[in-house]
Length: 503
Image 1: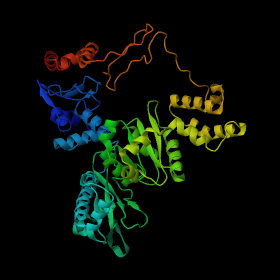
Image 2 (image 1 turned 135 degrees about the vertical axis):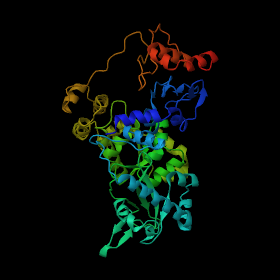
Image 3 (image 1 turned 120 degrees about the vertical axis):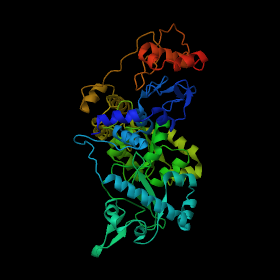
Image 4 (image 1 turned 90 degrees about the vertical axis):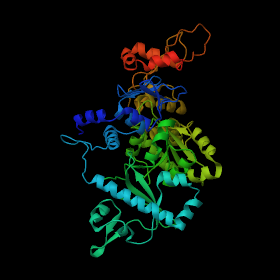
């Protein structure tokens, strides 16, 4: 467990203004720095950083916190990783006390250092190898993309890494999966004559490699085996590179291969990533749902792609919360995301996304395929096929909605009876809106508890357009609801009010 004393000392050492300014350029006005909020779209700066208070606060969406909280939100990091990131920027080492709940391995920093050194070697060899460069050029990748993903090349040969590492590094090379032990106590390089794609953890550290053949041999990709710093079944290729786009676009696109993710990223879909292996796993989905509420799965439209989609749906149902959603996109036969964006352009892929099937629609479509729901026996087969999915659905709203849609598709009017068939007492009724109130009467709060609250007034028969809210109204509302903010941002707010910038 990270020492609480260390956390306090780290926050005292770190200057939140510099922490934020390295990521979001700030304009100094008075004692504070201001910028457009990186956590929601806005045109007028309402995101403030107080050097005196060492906090940030957005008067638009309500996000607020200290330097650690900012790194957690901005880089999509869990708390311990955010602490380590901030400590690294401050040039100090994290101090742990008591029994560590994170099972810190003292060898891990040395292994990530070995991987970084290997990456530099592979990158330099790529720049020396004309065949590797031609292959990448033929695939249409730009220098910017090569740099972003750190693509390298492992030369043909059994002992190339011996020119970079000393015999003292042998154990670490084996532990990191870069070398293996042969007969008679000899050692050899695991990756040979392949393009090298670094796999980074969410903190940006290289923890493994995925290596692709250029000559058509099988398997097409080979990955680092499980090591003290890498578990293949839990990692997602390209997630580190995609984290900012995921946050900005509020969605993630999951494709089947590393090259698909890279090509989509280059085409403007920076929120793309790929599982390491042949199939999506629950660990992958859990990780993605911590970063966004909207997952888009892209599959080939063939039998294998449909089978993979069913597996993804089956995994998602026990994991999706009420506000989260999964969408399934199927590509035309013979196309993958790589070929589609190159042959038809990014617009074609975005159009496919807009036509994607929400999980609810895909569940109905997949379980009723080949059945005639006007036939009683086929209705029974449909309900039997849908039942396992309904029973494992976590979200009550999604589950009840699915039962209603299944009832409609099968021609059943009594949804409560159908709910009992699936093992539930009844479908929860949707509460009616109070009469006289316009559509959407609700109170909406941001994650930090400072979101704008909007009240609807009784309708007089005519629907009036909602009155636009100016930054000054948002600011005043927050000050009325949370008077302590007025004290914390005293001076800076007055300056902006008097200048009319928030008007």
